[in-house]
Image 1 (cartoon, rainbow, N blue to C red):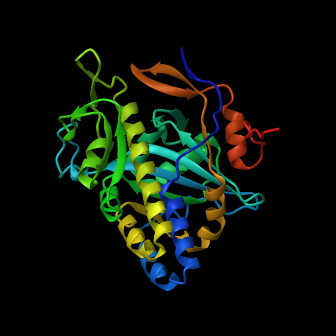
Image 2 (image 1 turned 45 degrees about the vertical axis):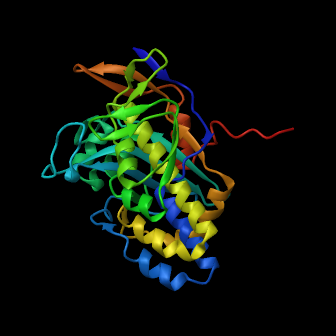
Length: 332
């Protein structure tokens, strides 16, 4: 058995798309343009069929299941799949926990290769997404014993519209970089302002190559794991750029929120404007982010992950019935 990660980690970094939308709305509210922004927010696509599977509210926490998908409807340049291929891949699964008592928020990353065994589903946890959002919500709830109150889906392909709306996103590359499958082509080290098409080529790259000091092209050996990391990096940079844009010019809130409609879907009961008042302060304070301790296993010839020591404490914290397993330290 290969040990992968046995320590609950707490970091301050990524801002999920829904949190950004909430903050954009909150900024708009403070500038007196709520009506226009409300008309945009009301058009955000909804995911139906979740009312029977989402958890009822409680007095302690609200948990949002955040799913990052790479729609294959537009084709996958890494595999040669065309636009007539149906279905989505769930490349990123996270749970955003909002603490109602303290007004703070935390983010838990769930490995897509986590092996679970629950009624109706045995295998990698992201495989449940093949049967739709409701099935993924059910499997996450049962496998991890976590309440899920809301659902937010982020489409990486849709983020191209947001990139264009904010005038491009800057990504820095330490080496010349390419992926002939996606069209990524960075001729020299440095920071580049990527447009929507270039940003998607970066985010979707599975055959990511760098020209190192030895004069040879080296492909990222982590493949899908590296791809998922770049997707999260792309989304994070895009969201931070959008947030900076709106804070600098609040009257662009409606424009940016409209672009985000191509990138997200939310459950029918979720009102981003109502959520904005609570989540904005949590974002300003910084999100604590956690990963589940896992160990590697091989099951039926496939490399998967199992929950490791310390996972129970992390999950108890996200349920709202346990202390923070790795609280932030404060300077003396």
